[in-house]
Length: 228
Image 1 (cartoon, helix red, strand yellow):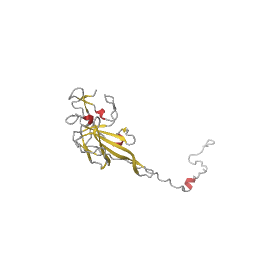
Image 2 (cartoon, helix red, strand yellow):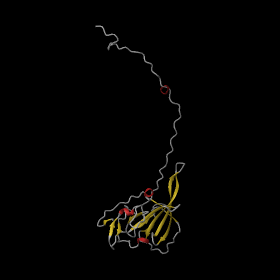
Image 3 (cartoon, one colour):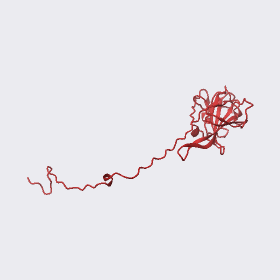
Image 4 (tube, one colour):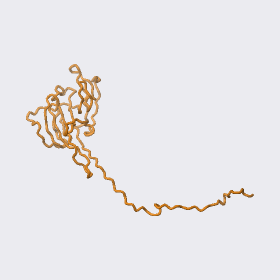
């Protein structure tokens, strides 16, 4: 049987020569120089020790209107909230029994001062934050100061203002209730250490969280009434 005009037999397909273009990249290996390795920026992270051994906890108890009456207000112990008297809290309030040793977060320069109507006896820890340098190493950067406030003030001979070197982890005081924390010593549930972080350049109080990296736990309310 004759095939229709223009049809091709499946048994004998018609083939046409095809030109195969050669790629220059395939014909010869690239001779371009390898890209330089990018400079690795060091992770200059300072480890700042927590002031107490064990898990940190927020101060949760704040006195109410009547003596012996306390409210559950853990958010007031963080950096930033405005308390009922209209003043913004510019630090951390960390609960701890009176007399608990307080340790230095990092090596630096230590001094003491008194603020009778505010921080009471407080320790000042001056240190430099580590930052990446142009050479790819870590170097001292911005100078900061940690304040540890309301310490027990029972050492009359303690010289105010004089600086000395201190190692990380050294005991620099004990939790107390000096200054405007008077009446909050144990057994009061208000016993706490106040910690503030500020810049040395202009004494601006800044959020401690990005620098300190501490993660205090919020205790249960127990018998305390809700904060109002």
